[in-house]
Length: 271
Image 1: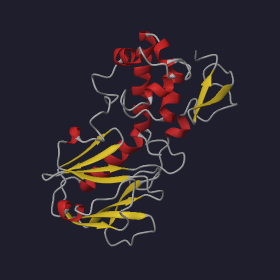
Image 2: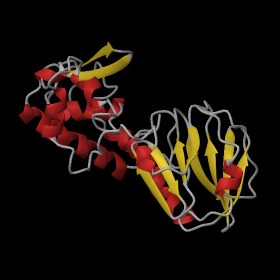
Image 3: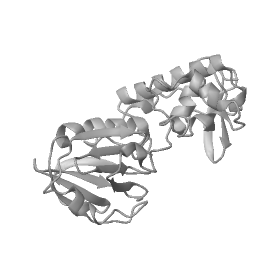
Image 4: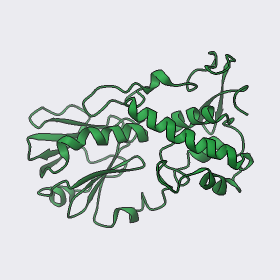
């Protein structure tokens, strides 16, 4: 599923075509996504100019003077910028037809995505209000992780994947960051030292930054807004490499499953 790097890349890809454009028409073909697309969207958004395109966690935010459109790509969603005249395919559920003759088209085969509209301050929306800091926010640090982890018996991997702790650390990137920091994914969060959390915070930022630079990680569905794939999968050090040699020490990469998630680790490098 698209994670923070893939969503950020999507945001950057649509900005040149969508920012500053007036929405001429909203076409809703399938309103039944994770939550129903509000029918009022057609009248609320039509005629409005997209004044800013932001991202919070895995949500894309299209701001207008009247309100904000909240988009989530779910498990298999994507946004494409296309000439408005191109016919929609089976899983193309919504178009924003823009004044420049293109449309922003949402494709979501599994329909776990979301399209919502709000007039409240975006940080107060129920989906965003309790989110933790972005990995690049000054408040995100080893001290931040260490302070929240003191009472956490959960595995450190699941702790850093909690969006109330820090946003954007999905399964792939949690595996990679823990490997870089030398921390076993099953270690209890409360049993990780502050010094090691400082290394983990740096690793989280570095892994996400590199994934963005490489265009994201294409393992199943993700492509850019122009249809091209991401290449960070070629640089993965630990994820989905069970049985292969560790790229750091030459030992064997192992796999374990906790809370229905696969974790990959090197028992020599991570403890």
